[in-house]
Image (cartoon, rainbow, N blue to C red):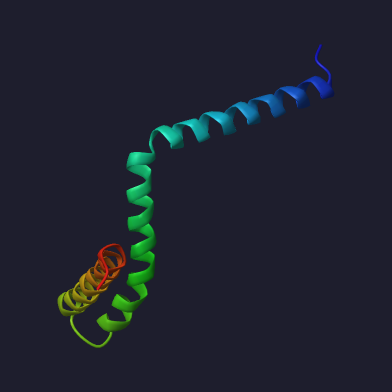
Amino acid sequence: MTTDSSISSIRVMVALCTVILVAAALFLASPIVEPVAFALFFIALVYPFQKMLQKKIPKAAALGVVLLITLVGVAAFLYTIARGFWGS
């Protein structure tokens, strides 16, 4: 028969092994997981603005405006980085 302490020890070991395996899987999948996580974060930032615009203008126009603003923001960010590396 197993006792409660041995069952508890087994659960702790299984949980620890699970955490280690998940961490290893995320590390190995980082070339895929990192861009997906960044995209989801960016969508979470932009989506409320698009929903607000959709109440005032058609959906396609709201998407175009948000896309244009996003591209301008990314271009400005890249320009700032480039100026930091190569100076003015």
